[in-house]
Amino acid sequence: MRIVFMGTPDFAVPVMTEILGQGHEIVAVYTRAPKPAGRGMDLRLSPVHALAEKLGCLVFTPKSLRGEEAAEQFRAHDADAAVVVAYGLILPKAILDAPRLGFLNLHGSLLPRWRGAAPIQRAIMAGDAESGVMVMRMEEGLDTGPVGMAEHVAIGPDMTAGELHDRLSVIGADLMGRALAALSRGSLHFRPQPEEGVTYAHKIEKAESRIDWTRDAKSLHDYVRGLSPFPGAFFEADLGKGIERVKVLRSKLVEGTGAPGTLLDDALTVACGTGALRLIEVQRAGKAPMKAQDFLRGARLAAGTQLQAA
Image (cartoon, rainbow, N blue to C red):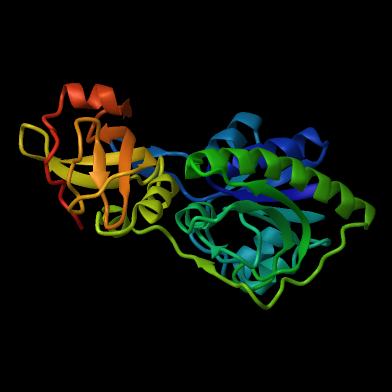
């Protein structure tokens, strides 16, 4: 089939590769425009853009898809179908109506739970025991379309958002490959999403990342792993050279009581509102992630130290 592919981050790359591996023709790639990044603030291509250029695909980076000019350009691709994976722009009706067989979207949750921008992080932050990927037919609402195929994935008690992201990306690529095969045969059938159980995975804001030690240990553990590796839950403390910000990338639930934010031992065990959390992997500003024991060699943090709360 002739496919228009629309995606931006790493999560979308395996899907694009799978589509090509299945023998489909990607007639155009739509992705977000390059953004300044790094110390030099050089323009950096999105992961999908970089792959598309490597493969010689035709690439478009519009700021908006509204208006007749954008719709006419899209219709000119003469696509059988379009595939969307974390693209990042709203698709108006004129665009959605263009492909002969419509739009398929790969979404990283078990819809209708966690519609929206950050389903993987929100699922873990909420302590969900299960997630998954779904192929749905796109419509104008936010992730409201009927579902054609799904795969379920268990969320382990210590699984991070990064680990779940990578697992769903691979599973999702295979799922989309099977969905396109069924679509080409006319055997992909859709069912409406349930009206009950709708939740929204709002975009992660930087202000959310500061750890509030007055929360219970279980919710903080889920919070830490849901924000790992990016943007990373953080606390602030004097490590010997003034106040520094430290990201927590992995943690462990342990026994312990004390004033919230107090170090209970010399192994980075922190008292929470209820229970305690042992910090397993952390990252100082400008440094690589490191195990707690390595971090403590260069940080003056002893039992009784009070970490700054939110």
